Length: 229
Image (cartoon, rainbow, N blue to C red):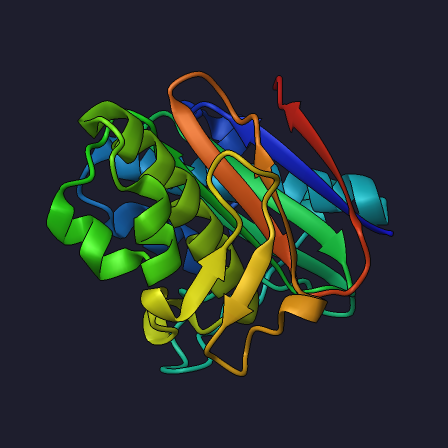
């Protein structure tokens, strides 16, 4: 059994008690955002990550340091890693919700999206496999959009787990029907083996859809919690 903790939060205010958790590189990234909401989302992701890592490893959140070096370009904007630990983290945000997924020693990916977006025919054609397009055919516009973003969050979650992101063609992976438990049915990319990929649709919060994925053959035990500072 692979245990995953998913912790959610609304954007935190830029208070000193949170800002002091950022190291110099993180503070530089925070300051580089032009919009306040983007600053708050970044800050919230780091606060969630550092407080949860501190709980898991012991010690104070102020002492947690991440290595966020990008594997592609070497700049500090990659997935945060915890040096000397097997903990694996994934951060996602959309609208007024920021989420963090944490597991131990297993690649994990989290995605959250606002539920108010619409999926037009071109987006459906771009992202869904033939079987998935068939599943949403005949739905009303509202129903199709809701089903589409169930598929979308699943796809984003598994691609984040691989670390390859959109380098994996969206149409190359097929999931179980949008109204069935989340399962990777088929994959045309060697980075995703259905036998070693597990995922779950999440409750998240009103107005949002979310999914979490892990590259493992074990079943998942997912705990969702909303963080209260």
